Length: 284
Image (cartoon, rainbow, N blue to C red; front, side, top):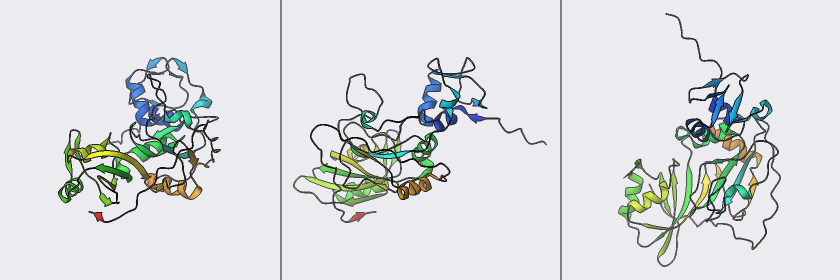
């Protein structure tokens, strides 16, 4: 029995992601929506290309130079509450992309999301393959959040969230919960989760009857936001940080990293950085 001939070319969504047009997941939604054509025909999710095809996005041709992979850039951004992780909002609300440094080629791809009422660490990259790996559940990359809870929290509530709770989209759990202090009716906790499902941290707490009054992401994998990055500001990753992030994603540093120029200070009142409440005892 002869071995089957391996498929030729690369998957369309991978090529476009590597070119920095978006994450693989984002591009897959474009294909499903009929926004991409290959040689005049609507593309499908199984489509592979060799590099000689004519590709159009929203009926606009993508030039070969546009499909070449840009230099890998990765920045960390401290998202304030009230901003959306989207390129444009029909209601005119502020978006994270309006504050990012401008690029000469490619475009910024958000590594995951934070909802409008959440704040803290967001990573952006021009490398679609890196973004895809960092978001893929198989990589088991930790996300750490500082959560302020209004009201009483019991030992049984904490144990249930570590053991696992059935949500509407499947079971979910925290890897760790660390009590981090607080005064009055507000108490802070640090939680670690391995997934990036929509509003998963909030939904886990709410399933126990708790009220989340503030949510800040403070770490993504090996990257820690720290206390020096003010809300609404970004900075490029340091070489050691980038190396650790690539290792977490299972990628080699075969592309030369490019250090992004720091963005000019935004106008208006200077905001304080989102602090990281102190750690305390840990629930496992």
